[in-house]
Image (cartoon, rainbow, N blue to C red; front, top):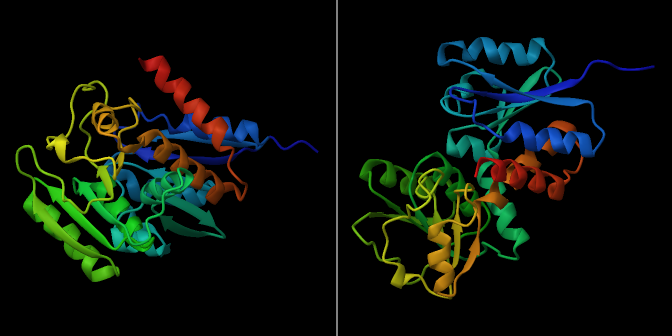
Length: 285
């Protein structure tokens, strides 16, 4: 007997028109022969409650949340993962048996991408540039995965101090805040350096974080959350100095793969998803 009813997933956001996640997830659904669809839906801030009710009413398997909904959505969920609870934001919701479970896969995607490159966080000293949503999620996951110390460097003192305090209070990782100065020198004990800002994201591809690149060494693993372009000026400068680099593309693909498995219970076809994302980004260049 044929089944003409597709299982629904999607993303709620505003703006959301330029979000490429649907291309990646749909490619994975096709590769695994799953009758699933990913809907890119503009949801205005005042309509979020109704939209989350629709997840239950329509029997959706789950949704992603992007700006400006990642924090407000907490009010409409039944349960949170440990990381999502600490971060205070959710980017993925799973609908199981009428209950809505909130997860944050931003940081998990980053950690998985690192592990895929053979890099462990256990006992490592991490330096994070920025303290926004992505930086916050990544810092929490780094802490939960064994990082010994995290230095948060940020221009906004209040936000940077708040993130460092959160890590010290909610995790076993020690953290401190440093105010971002011009041509900021990186702490000498840095083993993993992360650009958690949007500097370098298309169309501003020539931008890079304002740091002293002479303090980036071959002993560091340098990572970027920017995925478009994948090889940012920041990573190119780090590579010149002998550092191992990890692009934001891996983080985004691994995040999408985690979402796929949470919704379907099926192992994600990571290679297919990465190929789809690279193809989509290539069309924009």
